[in-house]
Picture 1 (cartoon, one colour):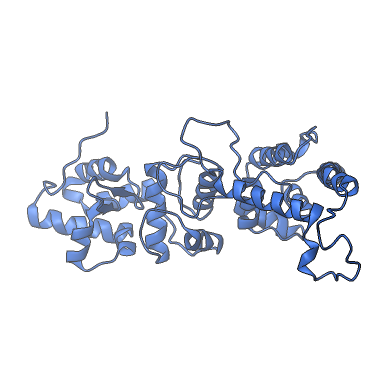
Picture 2 (tube, one colour):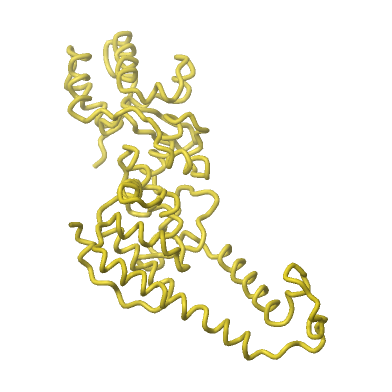
Amino acid sequence: MIDAARDPVPQVATAGEYVVALRDVRRRSGLTYREISRRASAAGHWLPPSTLATMLGRNTLPRERTVVALLAACGTPAADVERWVGLRRDIEARLSEPMRREEESTPPDPTSPDADSPQRTPGDPRRATGPARRRLRMGALALVGALTVGALLPRGEGTTTPSAAVCPIVLRQGMYGPCVLDLQERLVAVGLRVPVDGWFGPDTTSRVIAFQALAGLSVSGTVDQPLLDALSGDPVLPVPWPENRVSTHLRKTFAPDAAEAVRLARCLSGLDPLRVEVTADGSRRWGLFQFSDMELSRRGVDRRTALDPGWNIAAAWDVWSRTGDFSHWRCLPTP
């Protein structure tokens, strides 16, 4: 059984605390969003990764069926699931109590046309007066507040479990928070290794660009809704070559100078066929031997091809065979 399933049901009092507790269940399970979605489906629940990300990225009370699906996927015993559901219902009841008391205690507005209008119908817009109008106004203000709360915090600020009402329309390098954490987990789920730390740094940018190139999307290095949709749609990506396969292929291709070929590729890309580097002028370098955008254009290949390790090694061999050495590249190992 997953360790998270043995955790006791927490003692929380607010919707935000409830969501934080659910995040802890997910994190302690060790499962990615995609794995949770598949486990939920196997248990008879519907929980797409995007729905799970939305639920855990907000601080509002999630739907009961979504809570049940998450807990079931994480291996929580049925008895504990019932306690989680009961706790959720208690919080929901407390949230609705103040509104009901306000409605019961607030006298009608004598200036409102509704005060003496027994003929009004359920669809009459004039019903939005008095307590109802105040609730609508409060709801509108709450929505505006939620939309203006930053879903991402500068690195190093906030708590270890930053909450967000809404993720930004676009994620980009330098951002930090649960929305970036969700992005990183989705990248890992499709086979693109990246640190899952909530920090949108160069490694995450490299993986985003690689995914955009492999999936045939516009290559921008930023994350928008089409990219998130593509990540949620079980994209078919090439299986990355492990390091030992890359080394073997390099040694076989560059038999006259195998050791230097491996050293150079390791220095340039860490022997990572899907490595993309963004230079200071905004151009990009691709794959094992970090061919530039200009070099790809001259060779008439697209970026997806550039990330194919077989092509990248063959192109490097073509350069080596014409120059007789590796002087085309310059790379100093990182201290």
